Image (cartoon, rainbow, N blue to C red):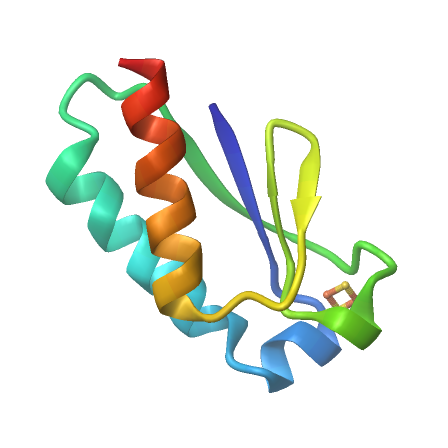
Length: 80
Ligand code: FES
């Protein structure tokens, strides 16, 4: 599973670095089998509804750190 967190200008101004930090912390805690890759990405063209994350090519908008980590953990669970 590849998780991209937009750290473009608009999403960053809406605290996407905290989303990234939180997902990385969840990965360290729960992804013991290393089934996910977390990376930053540039603007995805959905700034108006950012912050956004992209999981395996599917974009989800209006994220906050809690929503994003719940979504990540839900997807991680499905992978195991
Ligand atoms: S800066 Fe994140 S979608 Fe544009």
